[in-house]
Length: 209
Image (cartoon, rainbow, N blue to C red):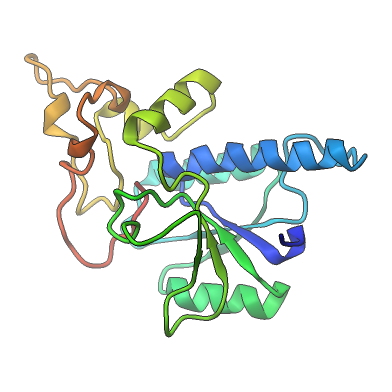
Protein backbone atom coordinates (compact mmCIF):
# COMPACT_ATOMS: atom_id res chain seq x y z
CA UNK A 1 0.00 0.00 0.00
CA UNK A 2 2.85 2.39 0.78
CA UNK A 3 6.43 2.89 -0.34
CA UNK A 4 8.89 2.11 2.46
CA UNK A 5 10.12 5.71 2.24
CA UNK A 6 6.65 6.91 3.22
CA UNK A 7 6.43 4.67 6.29
CA UNK A 8 7.68 5.38 9.81
CA UNK A 9 7.78 3.08 12.83
CA UNK A 10 7.07 4.44 16.30
CA UNK A 11 9.48 2.56 18.57
CA UNK A 12 9.17 3.38 22.27
CA UNK A 13 10.92 0.40 23.86
CA UNK A 14 7.78 -1.12 25.38
CA UNK A 15 6.81 -4.75 24.93
CA UNK A 16 4.14 -4.06 22.30
CA UNK A 17 6.46 -1.88 20.27
CA UNK A 18 9.15 -4.55 20.51
CA UNK A 19 6.78 -7.14 19.06
CA UNK A 20 5.98 -4.82 16.15
CA UNK A 21 9.69 -4.20 15.52
CA UNK A 22 10.21 -7.89 14.83
CA UNK A 23 6.99 -8.32 12.84
CA UNK A 24 8.11 -5.40 10.70
CA UNK A 25 11.58 -6.89 10.27
CA UNK A 26 10.01 -10.15 9.08
CA UNK A 27 7.67 -8.33 6.69
CA UNK A 28 10.53 -6.35 5.15
CA UNK A 29 12.64 -9.50 4.79
CA UNK A 30 9.74 -11.30 3.08
CA UNK A 31 9.20 -8.40 0.69
CA UNK A 32 12.90 -8.22 -0.16
CA UNK A 33 13.06 -11.97 -0.82
CA UNK A 34 9.97 -11.83 -3.04
CA UNK A 35 11.36 -8.93 -5.04
CA UNK A 36 14.91 -10.20 -5.34
CA UNK A 37 16.29 -7.40 -3.19
CA UNK A 38 19.03 -8.86 -0.99
CA UNK A 39 19.30 -5.68 1.06
CA UNK A 40 20.43 -6.23 4.63
CA UNK A 41 18.42 -9.09 6.17
CA UNK A 42 16.77 -8.23 9.49
CA UNK A 43 16.88 -4.48 8.95
CA UNK A 44 14.04 -2.11 8.11
CA UNK A 45 15.52 -0.61 4.97
CA UNK A 46 14.21 2.86 4.15
CA UNK A 47 11.60 2.83 6.93
CA UNK A 48 12.26 5.61 9.42
CA UNK A 49 12.13 4.65 13.09
CA UNK A 50 11.44 7.36 15.65
CA UNK A 51 11.61 7.60 19.43
CA UNK A 52 10.36 10.34 21.73
CA UNK A 53 12.45 11.01 24.81
CA UNK A 54 10.43 11.85 27.90
CA UNK A 55 11.74 13.73 30.93
CA UNK A 56 10.86 10.85 33.25
CA UNK A 57 11.92 7.92 31.07
CA UNK A 58 13.36 4.88 32.80
CA UNK A 59 17.10 4.70 31.98
CA UNK A 60 16.51 1.06 31.02
CA UNK A 61 14.06 2.14 28.30
CA UNK A 62 16.51 4.55 26.71
CA UNK A 63 19.33 2.01 26.91
CA UNK A 64 17.17 -0.70 25.35
CA UNK A 65 15.95 1.42 22.45
CA UNK A 66 19.48 2.61 21.71
CA UNK A 67 20.80 -0.95 21.79
CA UNK A 68 18.08 -2.23 19.46
CA UNK A 69 18.58 0.67 17.06
CA UNK A 70 22.27 -0.17 16.87
CA UNK A 71 21.76 -3.94 16.66
CA UNK A 72 19.31 -3.73 13.75
CA UNK A 73 20.85 -0.67 12.11
CA UNK A 74 17.59 1.24 12.38
CA UNK A 75 17.26 4.56 10.62
CA UNK A 76 16.31 6.07 13.96
CA UNK A 77 15.32 9.66 14.64
CA UNK A 78 15.13 10.71 18.29
CA UNK A 79 12.93 13.60 19.35
CA UNK A 80 14.26 15.21 22.51
CA UNK A 81 12.29 16.10 25.62
CA UNK A 82 9.73 18.81 24.96
CA UNK A 83 8.78 17.79 21.43
CA UNK A 84 5.16 16.65 21.27
CA UNK A 85 4.10 13.60 19.27
CA UNK A 86 2.10 15.84 16.95
CA UNK A 87 5.11 18.09 16.34
CA UNK A 88 7.28 15.07 15.65
CA UNK A 89 4.80 13.63 13.17
CA UNK A 90 4.60 16.95 11.35
CA UNK A 91 8.41 17.07 11.18
CA UNK A 92 8.46 13.58 9.67
CA UNK A 93 5.82 14.55 7.12
CA UNK A 94 7.87 17.58 6.14
CA UNK A 95 11.15 15.66 5.96
CA UNK A 96 10.23 12.35 4.34
CA UNK A 97 6.73 12.68 2.89
CA UNK A 98 5.31 10.46 5.62
CA UNK A 99 2.11 8.59 4.73
CA UNK A 100 1.78 5.94 7.45
CA UNK A 101 3.00 5.22 10.98
CA UNK A 102 3.33 1.64 12.20
CA UNK A 103 2.76 1.41 15.95
CA UNK A 104 2.18 -1.07 18.76
CA UNK A 105 -1.28 0.04 19.85
CA UNK A 106 -3.68 -2.62 21.18
CA UNK A 107 -7.41 -2.42 21.92
CA UNK A 108 -6.75 -2.40 25.65
CA UNK A 109 -4.60 0.74 25.47
CA UNK A 110 -6.12 4.08 26.53
CA UNK A 111 -6.18 5.32 22.92
CA UNK A 112 -6.78 1.97 21.25
CA UNK A 113 -10.45 1.14 21.78
CA UNK A 114 -11.67 2.91 18.64
CA UNK A 115 -8.74 2.00 16.39
CA UNK A 116 -8.53 -0.77 13.81
CA UNK A 117 -5.63 -2.29 11.87
CA UNK A 118 -5.74 0.74 9.58
CA UNK A 119 -7.02 3.95 11.18
CA UNK A 120 -6.67 7.47 9.76
CA UNK A 121 -5.18 10.06 12.11
CA UNK A 122 -7.59 11.88 14.41
CA UNK A 123 -9.26 15.19 13.44
CA UNK A 124 -6.92 18.12 14.03
CA UNK A 125 -3.80 16.02 13.43
CA UNK A 126 -1.59 15.96 10.34
CA UNK A 127 -2.90 13.47 7.79
CA UNK A 128 -1.39 9.99 7.98
CA UNK A 129 -2.54 6.39 8.35
CA UNK A 130 -2.06 4.61 11.67
CA UNK A 131 -1.08 0.99 11.05
CA UNK A 132 -1.69 -1.28 14.04
CA UNK A 133 -0.50 -4.84 13.32
CA UNK A 134 -1.27 -6.11 16.83
CA UNK A 135 -4.44 -4.13 17.56
CA UNK A 136 -6.38 -7.31 18.43
CA UNK A 137 -3.59 -9.03 20.38
CA UNK A 138 -4.01 -9.74 24.07
CA UNK A 139 -1.42 -9.35 26.81
CA UNK A 140 -0.94 -13.12 26.67
CA UNK A 141 -0.41 -13.00 22.90
CA UNK A 142 2.35 -10.42 23.31
CA UNK A 143 4.27 -12.50 25.81
CA UNK A 144 3.74 -15.72 23.85
CA UNK A 145 5.39 -14.03 20.86
CA UNK A 146 8.29 -12.55 22.80
CA UNK A 147 9.06 -15.81 24.56
CA UNK A 148 8.63 -18.01 21.47
CA UNK A 149 10.92 -15.86 19.34
CA UNK A 150 13.43 -15.33 22.18
CA UNK A 151 14.02 -11.72 21.13
CA UNK A 152 15.36 -9.17 23.59
CA UNK A 153 12.95 -6.90 25.45
CA UNK A 154 13.40 -4.24 28.14
CA UNK A 155 14.78 -5.78 31.34
CA UNK A 156 12.19 -4.00 33.51
CA UNK A 157 9.61 -6.60 32.52
CA UNK A 158 11.63 -9.28 34.28
CA UNK A 159 11.52 -7.21 37.49
CA UNK A 160 7.73 -7.21 37.90
CA UNK A 161 6.69 -4.29 35.71
CA UNK A 162 3.87 -5.13 33.30
CA UNK A 163 3.11 -1.73 31.73
CA UNK A 164 5.68 1.04 31.40
CA UNK A 165 5.18 4.78 31.54
CA UNK A 166 7.64 7.04 33.32
CA UNK A 167 9.51 6.60 36.59
CA UNK A 168 6.92 8.69 38.46
CA UNK A 169 3.77 6.91 37.31
CA UNK A 170 4.93 3.30 37.07
CA UNK A 171 5.41 0.73 39.81
CA UNK A 172 5.83 -3.03 39.83
CA UNK A 173 2.56 -4.90 39.49
CA UNK A 174 1.31 -5.97 42.92
CA UNK A 175 -0.33 -9.02 41.33
CA UNK A 176 3.17 -10.40 40.72
CA UNK A 177 4.44 -9.88 44.26
CA UNK A 178 5.67 -13.09 45.87
CA UNK A 179 5.42 -13.98 49.55
CA UNK A 180 9.09 -13.13 50.08
CA UNK A 181 8.63 -9.62 48.66
CA UNK A 182 10.22 -10.28 45.28
CA UNK A 183 8.32 -10.02 42.01
CA UNK A 184 7.67 -12.56 39.28
CA UNK A 185 8.42 -11.48 35.68
CA UNK A 186 5.72 -9.86 33.56
CA UNK A 187 5.01 -12.94 31.48
CA UNK A 188 3.76 -14.70 34.63
CA UNK A 189 0.74 -12.39 34.95
CA UNK A 190 -2.30 -14.62 34.49
CA UNK A 191 -5.03 -12.00 34.10
CA UNK A 192 -4.20 -9.59 31.27
CA UNK A 193 -6.86 -7.21 32.60
CA UNK A 194 -4.42 -6.44 35.43
CA UNK A 195 -1.71 -5.31 33.00
CA UNK A 196 -1.93 -1.64 34.03
CA UNK A 197 -2.24 -2.24 37.78
CA UNK A 198 1.19 -0.70 38.30
CA UNK A 199 0.24 2.57 36.62
CA UNK A 200 -0.95 5.82 38.18
CA UNK A 201 -2.13 8.90 36.34
CA UNK A 202 0.38 11.71 36.34
CA UNK A 203 1.08 14.19 33.57
CA UNK A 204 4.35 14.39 31.65
CA UNK A 205 5.17 10.69 31.47
CA UNK A 206 4.93 8.90 28.15
CA UNK A 207 3.16 5.67 27.34
CA UNK A 208 5.52 2.75 26.68
CA UNK A 209 3.24 -0.25 27.51
